[in-house]
Length: 257
Ligand SMILES: Nc1ncnc2c1ncn2[C@@H]1O[C@H](COP(=O)(O)OP(=O)(O)OP(=O)(O)O)[C@@H](O)[C@H]1O
Ligand SMILES: [Mg+2]
Image 1 (cartoon, rainbow, N blue to C red):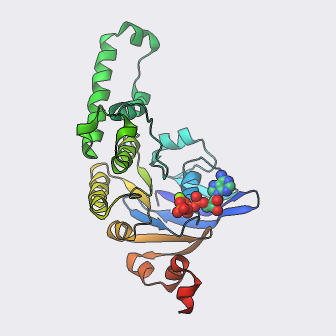
Image 2 (tube, rainbow, N blue to C red):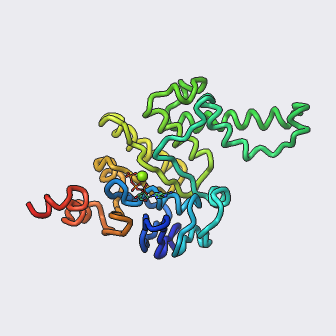
Image 3 (cartoon, protein in one colour):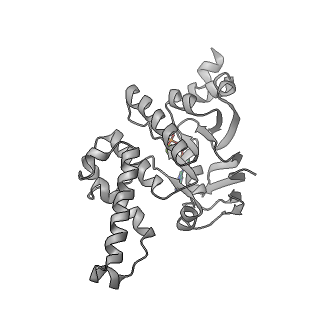
């Protein structure tokens, strides 16, 4: 049984069909690439999986449960976390606070405990602090815990987004262009980081990325989207050698050349 399955998923915004009849599945432990030209519908697919949008048609099944149309919060609780193409951190909070805020959902003390600062509160706070540090260490942000999130260089903000997603303790992690704005050295670094977190947290991953070297390095299987539709699905090599994929990226001129 696949961990995630999209069955004939369509999303229309008024007259615009952003995603049309898309079906693919992801097995537990897999890392797949989701690629396609700008505006193809990739981020919309993530928004459909995470409950930001409700599919116009079709179904999404996760971990044996139909999550079609479920709320974003319940989908997080079911075990799906994501990062955003347009970084969405709490800019004015510190790096540490950005993670701790997420972990507070696990804190099971009430307002009374908090006001009186009971030993239970102190104990839980310590646990959350340690756990925050663990996630920040994994992504290599230990030296920046007190910095404001928006003071970090772009590449580190993307790593903080990854740490925040990990703090939600997901089974499935959706990464939307984690390498955007990174130079080749940072991309190599990111590939290592993604491999490490996949192993450490036993994750299944869907990776949207325009840096093809990163996709080819990480993803044995790739789904290609073009104009909202599935163009093809195949191994890294099949996708690399497919003339339809080159045409989608490079345009008709290439096809006619
Ligand atoms: N809320 C919305 N309302 C109307 N149209 C939308 C909405 N969200 C997305 N679209 C449209 O859906 C199409 C797919 O957009 P999407 O952001 O999913 O593409 P993408 O593959 O992620 O592109 P990129 O690589 O540039 O990030 C675009 O034509 C976009 O304008
Ligand atoms: Mg996008």
